Image (cartoon, rainbow, N blue to C red; front, side):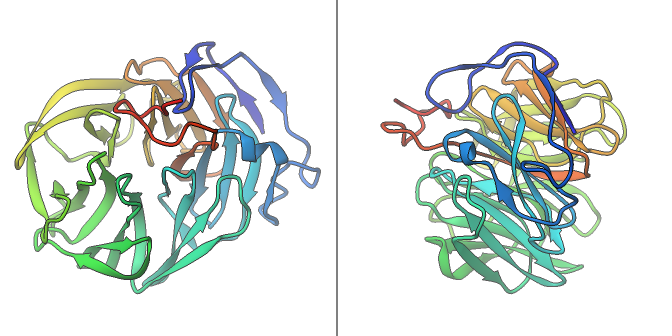
Amino acid sequence: MRVGVVATIVVALAGCGAQQATSTSGTLPAAGAAGARGGHVRTWMRPEAKSSDLVYTSDFEGNVYVYALPALTLVGELAGLGANTVNLCSDMRGHVFVPVQNGLSGEVLEFEHGGTTPIATISDAYAPLACAVDPSSGDLAITNDESAYASDIAIYRGPKGTPKLYRDPNAVGYVSLGYDDAGNLFAIGDDSLGTRHLFSLAKGARALTEISVNIGLRLIYAVQWDGQYMTIAHMPFRWGTARIDRLQISGSSATVVGTTKLSSPTNRFAGQTVISGTMLVQPYSRRTDRLGIWPYPAGKTMAASVDVGEYINGVAVSLARRDGCRRPHRRGLRTC
């Protein structure tokens, strides 16, 4: 595996100030040597991972690869977590949550920043797919596939205990979740005809509400907060430019007020999109086996990329803990 930074820019990470991404190219040790993946046979983490900002990405075979930011240097792997790990999420402490599907049931594993062993396991009665953490409370929301024809959103307080379940009659499956900074939850779901919708669960509300958007939602695969706006990510079906739309939401309607476009050498995109401060992380390529970084909200030209070597889908950014840097301000950056 080779790590290549395809452009030299200042990437202002979601941390204390900006960091310089420099053009580097290096080869990792051969399989079996310290720091190599070794054919998915073991879990490992380099010591420097604890003090580095990290991006976690998952494949479809229960493995999670960990890269240091902004250089995208491989620093660890969590191997053999379960049959299917799809989406990931992280919280304000830098903890990473990994939903694992085991047939029609599953669990969510919680890892500390740079940790190799789960510090908590949340058993789930159904098949968890995606997750999001409320920055205002620490509550964990999970999308569940109950069957081929039903789905719910489970919210764990703490996160622990018995979850509160939310369902909408117009949704048979949810593909993405995201909280804003006030604790309002947004979800993307499909109806029985495969039509995609945007839903919201206002903080303290008892039921989901559908949000009408002034654009088509057919190719939307991610919803998240960018520090100022809720955003939705459009992934091209086969080939094209990915698009991140910023939404102005009022009541049960939303209007696009800004757009970020992403380009890559292959112009093929898929999987989870993560915005962290002025950085956007996204899997791409024909086999979705590469991970890229783009400046946000500028987009367009990719700043860095790495060949993961496996089909990947889930992405989460985990920030190293620093003294005096505990809460984000409105643009998603830490205050120091």
